[in-house]
Image (cartoon, rainbow, N blue to C red):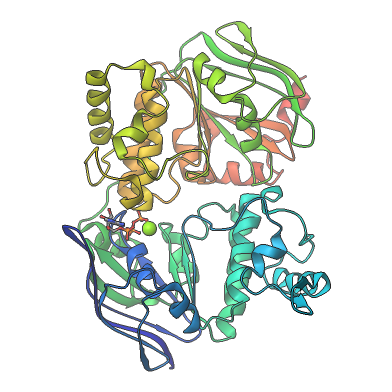
Length: 501
Ligand SMILES: Nc1ncnc2c1ncn2[C@@H]1O[C@H](COP(=O)(O)OP(=O)(O)OP(=O)(O)O)[C@@H](O)[C@H]1O
Ligand SMILES: [Mg+2]
């Protein structure tokens, strides 16, 4: 089998710590090599080494059998290495086409943009990721997060890579979209591209990977053929011990009083005549495929986007607001699905980020205390409030973002994909924190494409499809299978709402 990438004894040190320590790692042509490990294990850093992020790594790297220096992104690219980052890198206001061909835009004569070629080339690339139907001239901000993800892949393919790295490509994707991505990956395999695939989602790994390497604390634990390991064994390798049971149904803490009630809420083109309520202490799940309008509803509920009609009542009184700050002042907080965009300030420290939405709430002393407590409760690692947020691993950034909204002590906390990119252990920690909030009388609205999570945490689940509510599932009936059927517009709970009216 042809080896496209070989890393020998590669290390990368940050001040004080080795993020990657004497790692041997190789990738064959036409294979998917999964890279696993807990948050902060060093996966992204290892891949950033081959993406040319650092000029101070040590060890040897061979691409297609030749020793190479990967000291800049350009050098990595020239050697056929393309990476799709955990956080997408597309320029939002700019068209898909220009993003796809950034750095190599076709020209007519010496400087005139060749629009015809631009469109033609873009369409070809979009076709390779199943987006042939999309107009390449629309701006990236006009398409969904999951489509943007596919555009990102198309962009990488445009550079004819022999090695393609995907860092948590499916964390923003629904089940259908994951299947579509896997279809694309299988085609890329046949073309001989070597793929490195980072994910925390183990069922996915067993489905798509040929081999798997597990990292822990910057070091390699082992490389195995996927057929030689069970999921349990992988988890044990990742965390260094056997894992306990993941979900037990929590005992509900719902109180009588309705905290938030929404009546006939609409935003044209996104969601229509939405009615629901959340009680104090309740965790209300919203189930749906991506594009169902869940995040759009959440954005309008917290004043990011406007509404066209309907009412929002908090504690029995109608409230109106036109900005996120006003909504927050009422006690409506939103953990967005995109942590860079509406979440974290990468230039600030962990502590500053945690307090950034609630600074007027606490005295400096109390602020320090609350930061300390949240870092501890959510097990942010490293547990240092002065650390720059940009130096935390993806999963730990996610925990800081959750901490930020928890610090605002909202009446209603809306969580959109709260455990995206988070490892198994940290996931349990986050679930615990969310349940505790509910137990303390806060209301939670949970949007997640992780069905076990939705089934495990929710007291009640509302099903959304194409911008409408189409059914409701009570906690006793709330299983993964029901949710999956419901999200796809099937199953016995679908249309329950409409029929009961
Ligand atoms: N720029 C940096 N400066 C200092 N330390 C860093 C920097 N980038 C990463 N680290 C540290 O290196 C370690 C490995 O981080 P890395 O991002 O590679 O983890 P990961 O395995 O990708 O985790 P996750 O699953 O959470 O994305 C972490 O302890 C992290 O805090
Ligand atoms: Mg990472």
